[in-house]
Length: 511
Image (cartoon, rainbow, N blue to C red; front, side, top):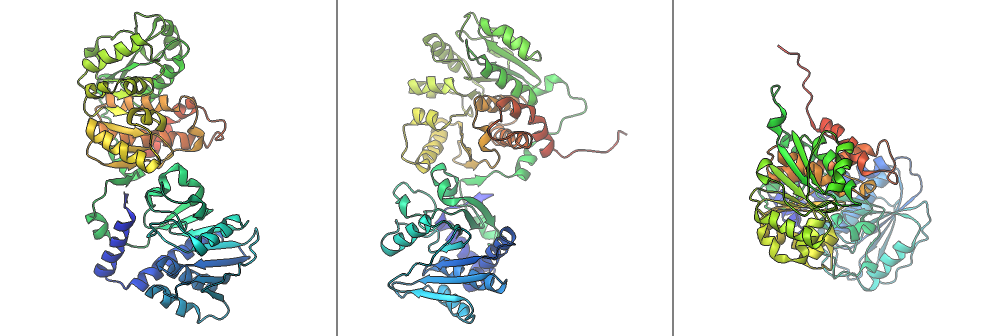
């Protein structure tokens, strides 16, 4: 799914109006109906009071249309229209006239003084004060209304976007003047700001509603931003030949582990083999050999000269692809060994954890990274690579520029992991859950990526497929565990189920 900036969505609205064609008031009616239908599903048995707060623009027009439709569905609705400048948008004015035809709906137009209603815990407020076109912090009376709603005990449902929130960058916003919604029903596409952790408090649970924006307009409008969806990931999977053997699926080299951190190597190794690599060799310090051979008998080992840490390269020409970093530490001799690895490698590799921390200490190493390699930092690791950021929006744009300038795939890990490509694209992952915020989860991801890269998937395919599989395996594991109890090894145990969910199972008999 494409994601668009808020100004692009306005252009898509206009394109739909011009080329469907449809009048703007009818497109608003369509959006309001989609909201009302979704509301009716979630709050089917609700019998309390619904208070609609409408602003003077088109978001307010949506709100007034929704108030009318909810009334026709026999909900008890009262409406406040805030119009301090006595200047409503044309569609908002039209929907005001339509609503006034139903005198049963309590309607108050606020032009100066606002007498706030008593809102109780069992009440629902529908927030339609401002939409995604807002570009400066709320102030004055509207800021007071937002603070009043946020202090109330009721449930708040926002139309398209919580009032006061910007669609993209909120670094300069006043977060005290943003609606904290329990639910947000957004139209056609999620807003970019919904994908950043600092805004989670405001958007609550998000549902995307299709309002039928013109598909030709969507297809023709360029954007670097995409949401990864299952059908697309499924299309990336390669079907295995019935005559395949392990040599067809690559020989992966995993450089991982040190004294006290061999678990990282074990987790990454298991995930690599569960992801389909034909052969795996784990290069480990001498003290880690017995651990690897016992924990993962399917893997071979390459034993380092050093008893405790990674200090020397194995024969790289024996392997199809390499991952390095989990648990290797940042000792001086390991820094030298990693530098040697980068200087002697030409194929794309996967760099994670301590490999990234070493590179962050010496930016000249960036120039040695083979093109199309895959880097997997979490936000703090990325900040060490590229400098601190004031917001997730700024960090994302740094990551996109980083990927382009280094000609690498940068996987910025998080709730909506962002895959930034050398071509300037950004793909947001949609799988995963908070239970995966646990020790070793990143090592599992590295293993999955390594297993896929060994099978000759492109770096782009590896990044998108691997991140989606990792999250999907975690989601399937959550069916058996709680978020609190989920372990990284549980994710590994459910990788096979993730593949099955993505695969089309052939039931035809042998002929």
